Length: 160
Image 1 (spheres, rainbow, N blue to C red):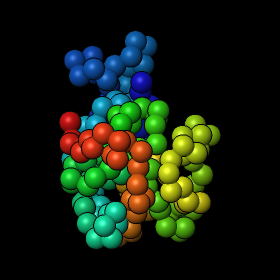
Image 2 (image 1 turned 30 degrees about the vertical axis):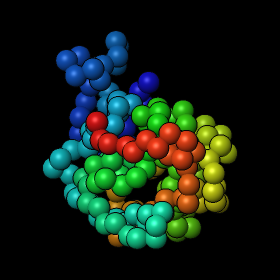
Image 3 (image 1 turned 180 degrees about the vertical axis):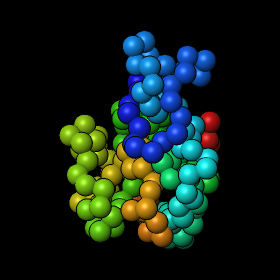
């Protein structure tokens, strides 16, 4: 499953990397696997995760990285069981009201998945759908009090 990248992401498809689809030459895509496709030379953006225990963790990632990728790259306990294929709600995060407005409304598919998330709020989003850019600079993203998979199987995510 592939989806279009936000403008400004540097990597384009290539048959040797597995990002290709026939007939889509030169189109940019993000593979569903958790590996950053943001341009390493892109502007670095710092923002904060408010973790479940109330502590705050500041992370810095290249612009164009998703919040989910940022979490995995910085050992933040945010799962992402479907590997960013927009098929679960385990990467549910809570934005501030201002940040939610900056990013706009989620798609209908994202809203349907958010309906399955525990601790849903009016400013909930899926971290795999929020791209880090200037809008998130120095802002805070909160992790909900719980998620379904962590407390069922004890899985702790690691970047892949």
